[in-house]
Amino acid sequence: MHASLLSLLSVATVALTVVTAQQVPEAAFSSPRQVIQGIPAVNPVKQPWIWPLPQNWKRGSSTLKISKSIRFEGQGARQPIISKAIKRYKGLMFKKEDFPMIPYNWTTTDDKPSRSTLETVVIDIKTTNDRLDVDTDESYTLTVPVNGKAALQAETVYGALRGLETLSQLVQYYPERRTHFIPNAPWKISDFPKYKHRGILLDTSRHFYTVQEIEKIIETLSWSKLNVFHWHMLDSTSFPYVSKKYPELAAKGAYSPRHVYTAKDIKRIVQFAKEHGVRVIPEMEAPGHSTAWGYGIPEIASCLNTQPYFGYTIQPPAGQLNIAHPKTKEVVHGLIDEWAELFPDSFFHAAGDEVIMKCWEDDPYITDYLQKKNQTLKQLFDEFTLGMEDHVRQKNKTVVVWQEMLLEYHVNLPKDTVVQVWIGSEGVKEVTKMGYKTIVSAQNFWYLDLGFGRPRSNPYPEVQGAGFNHWNRVYSYDMRANLTKSEADLILGAEATMWGELADPNNIEDRLWPRAAAFAERLWSGYENPKGEALTSADAILRLLPWRERLVLRGVRAGPLGQGFCTRNPLDCFQPPPKA
View 1: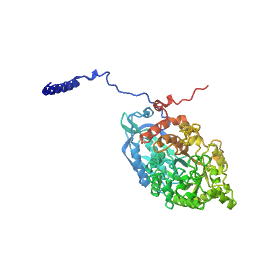
View 2: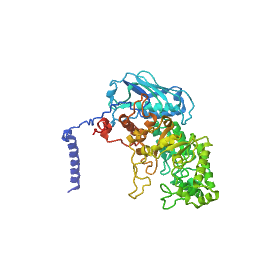
View 3: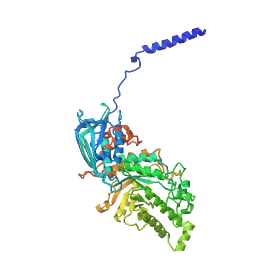
View 4: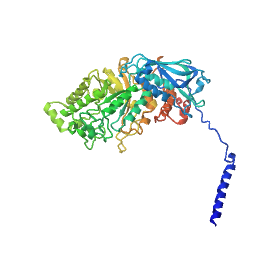
C-alpha cells in the first residue's frame, strides 16, 4: 500500500476515534454513578472523648466553633516550655479526616452551632519554676465557655501541658461542614494524676533507635499524659554510650560507629523530654547482662561470650561484670559520675536483675579472690552492688533496683531504695509488705513485648513464647489487689515495658500503641472516679477506639483494636457473653 494512503488512513482512524469518544453518552457505561454512604457508624460518646479520662468533668450540649487563628494569652503562655507547646498544639488541634472510621456522634450535641467562636485561651501558671521530678504538680483546670475566653490554670508548666493536651482532644472535625468544633460546650474540667510515676521502659541496646526515633516515642507517650521515659540503654548485646572517660567501651561494644549515643545526644533527648513534661531515668544494667562491657575492657568481664551459653546467662551472649576486679568498680563508679551529670532526674536505676551465679563460680579470678579474702560469693555480690548503690546516693539520687535484689538475692537494701517489680504481680505484695516503695511492671500484665515468641528467638520448637497482653488485660490489671491501704500507698506508680528482643524502630509503634495508652489511663485516672464509681473497660473502649484513630491521624502507626466494623460500631461487637 502507498505510504500516502497509509498516512491518510491513520489520520482518518484517529479522527474517528476522537469523534466516537466524544459521542458516547455516559449512560452507556453500565449503571449510573452512585454516592457511597458507608456502613453505619455509631459511638454513643457516653464519656468525653478525652484520653486519659479527667478526674472531674462537666459538659453541656452546645456546639462551639473554634477559630483556626486561636490565640493563647496570659503570663503562662509566655513561659518558654508553654510557648513551644502552643506551636505544636496549634498543628495537632486542627488535623482532619474527611472520612473518619469513627465519626463523632453529633446527635449528642446541638446540631446548630453557637453563634460565638472560641478565639482566645488565657493561660495562668502560678510558678515560673520549671523543675521536673517525681513530685512535680501536674494538676490543671480547664474552662471552655460558650461565650468568651477559655481559661487554663495550673500550678506548673507541666500541669499546663496536660491541659493543652486535653483542650486539643476536645476539638472535633465535622466533615459535612468542613469545620472544626468543640462539641458539648461549655466544659469545666478539673484534673490531676492518680499516680506520680507513669512511664514506658524502652530497650535501645538490643536494637538501636536514633535520637529522632526516641523523640517521637517521647512525644507520643506525653499525649497519653505519661511522664517517664525509662531508658534501658545498656545490655549484654551492645554498649552504645560514648563515655568521656572510657571511650573504648562504645568503640568496641557498640554495633557500629553509627549506633551510639553521645553526651550531646543525651542532653538533647533530656531537654526534648522536659519540654513535653517527661522525665528521663537512666538504667545502668549491672552486674548482670554486661557482656558488651567486656569487649572494650576485657578484665572487667566474667564468662565473656562463653559457648554454649546455657547455664551462664538468661539469653545470649553470656557475660557479667567481674565483681572482684578493682577495675570494674572504677569503671562503674566513673560511669555513674558521668550519668549523674547528664541525667538531672533524682531517680537512677542501678539494675540488679537476672544474675547467674555460675558465671562467677566458674571464673578462676573470682574463685581465687574469694579464697584469699575468705569471703563467700554472696558477700562479694552484696558488697559490690551496695557499693554501686551508695555511689549513686552520693550524687543525691534515689536508687531504683529490680525486685531480685530484695526478693531473690536477699540484699539488705536501705529503706529509701525503690524496688521495681516485674516477675509477676504477686511481687507487689511482697515488696510493699516489707515497707519498700515500688514501681510496678508486672510482666503478666504490663510487659508489652510479650506474645511474639520467646525473647531469644531460638528456632528449637520446645522453646515456647509467653502470652500476649492485649489492651483489655492491660487495662483490667489492678496493681492494688490484695494490698492493705498502707501497702498500696507505697506504690509510686508503674511502667509498661518494651524490651527489645523482637521490637525495633520498624514495629515499635504498633507494639506500644494503643496498649500503652490503656496502661496510661490507669496511672492517670486510676480505677475509680472521685465518686467511687469503677472505671470499666466497657466504657473505656468507647474512648480508646477514637483515641487510637487520633494517634494515627497524628502520624503514629498504632495497631488496631479490632476489625473495622467494630471500630465504627463498638456496641454491636463489644458485648458480654451470654450467661450459661
